[in-house]
Image (cartoon, rainbow, N blue to C red):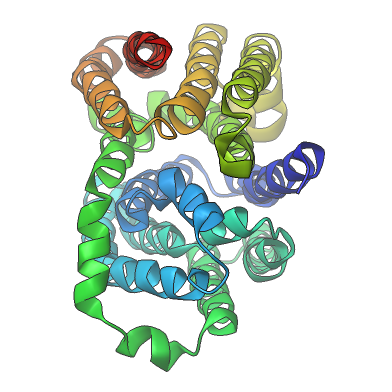
Length: 402
């Protein structure tokens, strides 16, 4: 698949997926109040972290594995990865639901719990496999459309005065059903479940570095809302949540472009790796600058239009813009430079450094400065990750030159 088609397909589809929650979020912000608004956000935050745990790092290394595998090997690769993630998903969903219920406002604990379980199940997504194949259509049919329908129905129920809990419940059914339906098109469910679980566990161990990288990264990105909620008042957390909604959309677009380019960079036996890696970095730098400008210039206005009194302030919006710029650059440095060069450990070291800085800063500064403090912690973490990855990339370049 050409570069233009990859970008058009695998960037547009996740971007559309990131927009789906905006079918219900404005309704939720205006009609449901602060409690349900924060509860849904907490569930998404906790669930997003555990979805990274469930994905076992395949968002990072999966497309490359599929691109380099033969046509005969690919279905078994899918089955092996799916079994490994199912083993992780069952306990992860339970733990996510309990934690979300404990952190959410008391009357909305069940809403937060179901949302956390639903988003955790999203870690079973087949996107890694389809990106490696260069096949975008099944992503639309099995993942994008079911979630859109569930969100529309949930939003309509809330708008008509129904309970908010219907939204995460319908979303859970859509996510789990879509994942299971696509898996059945690759291989019979019985064949997937009866395959070698020992081989699947070995597969998971082989990619522990990538899995740990995504999981540690989630400690200061996907868990940021939960950390801010724990550190400040519900009113301050509500403002941060509004900025976080836009941030998640930007992060999805960045990750989608990163995935779309990942297979392309190493195609043709890596004959064009250097030139393509540089082009990928330039594309991500441009995307990151666009994201920064959008946050800095439009963030407060857009969140006021969408979420009313729950809007983000200017300083918090600028800090979110800094974070999205850094994430865009590190996505390309990691997936298009360090992973193909076999430097997955470098990515892990960078996100550990980011977590060491970001988690305590987010907790402490959000208790002092509210939403601005939380965004400061997030931006600081992403700056640290970028600096560490740049250092590793320069070292790797010198080694290749020698």
